[in-house]
Image (cartoon, rainbow, N blue to C red):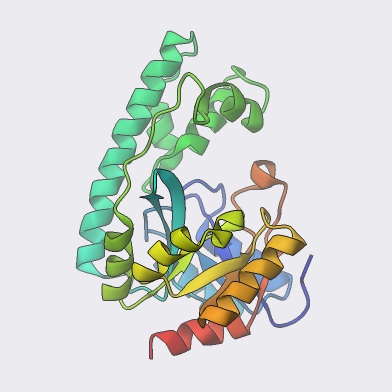
Length: 276
């Protein structure tokens, strides 16, 4: 764990997407453990940004605006983080509204598939769990656990919700180039989230760079020491920003807590310099 002074957790999720904590609570906890900066990067929504920013002022911790998108690159799901975006961007809000509607339809189809497996949930209870944020598979997994239909979050995904399992439904995503353009037009910086070993694929990396990716997330729970070093080396040789964070949703999701994986404050400086 890297919790020394000057560290930043730039990848957190709140209950506005598939986490369980309020943005303000994430900020408060991050301040309590001495982090210098954080970013709440919920999937396909900016709903918690103003709340997080106000909490940052109250608790004396820097809050970087953030969001996480999913894209398909060569039929592989890939995630893109957008930092320092304008949370009041009208164009971005329109696209996010469309993605939100598609997520609801996906949830309806997953619920229908679960019912054919003898697992009876209602779309109403799933939407209630997601509140005003985006609905996702974790909300459905949580409902399954609470109903006693499975005994754990991991079992819900492993038996029913993961790709290749009987109730999996692919989600609607935007093209990579459209996502990077949306982030750029909203004044932000696009980062390839947790690239893992795929960073070694020169052709894949080239597509990301051609689309306007400005950095790589090196520090992440899914990355071992070797992968982290490789990503850092590629970022440094390519003039890319290096970021990182815990990708915290809730403890049961990855067995990782806020601040367990962090990036140095130089990542925040680099992000801010990229939009000047």
